[in-house]
Image (tube, rainbow, N blue to C red; front, top):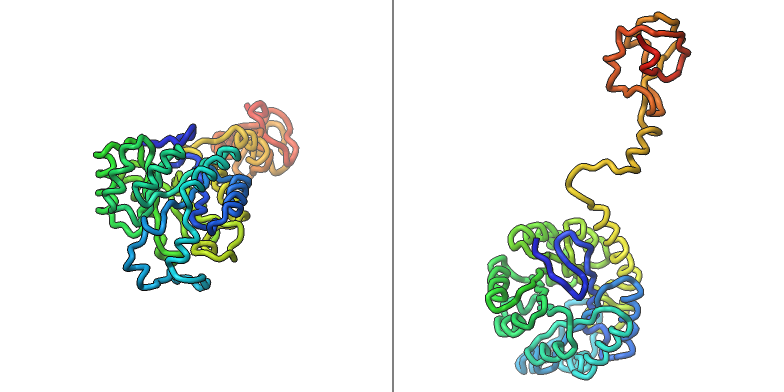
Length: 351
């Protein structure tokens, strides 16, 4: 079973899920808000907070800006043009270092998704514990090549990608020096329809690649990421906000503090409850047998010397006497002494 290691945490299929609170650009360019979100993510159980590292020049071409396009596939109204939003929401280089230092002080992992080589270099200076590659860059071989040999685990989202494209990316990263890798099943719709989520892809990816498989979730609420954990997802990435009504691209599809708490707490409970494949009766259940199971009792007053028939016997609690599945061994045996109605039959009662 292949694993990746993030700091002192080993992550593999069906391991305790590593939960990434994806703040992304939900900080809205406000470092006070960013730190409030870090505090909240930590308080509600996240292992890591992750941001997005892009600049006005590293992500979007001039042609796209010139069209004044807005990412308006949600009902929320956004201010200004696409260029104005990108300018407001992007993380400046010095803000990376500020947030990394703050995460260290709060004892929560800091990471960010780079969108260019320049931002990879910033994150190396921040000593991030892994590189996350966004779904949009699964075929960006220049970026994949740049992160492959940086001696960090690579976590690769698979939204919009065919199985062939995933395979190409995995092979490319491996051939170019990446020693630890995990994949995230992802649907790059915000939010996706339930029928399009296809959580069974988690099982397929586990089998197809033999790598740790997680889930990058864009659904509303917490039920879908919890369900993914039951399928063995070992990394959960969920957009995070302290207020779904804040302006910005992703707040309304993000988990709020209460939802993140449920994902972290119940996710661990689900993972623990999966247990092992082999059938085991626990010590606690063994102890229940004496109270919950039945024993053979006589159903009438019987005299010494009586020869037992099936009609003389029934089964009732407790389970401290002769087990009901041994009833055939009692038929035709005779009693040594009188036996009172509704009492447990013992082997010592029989000749």
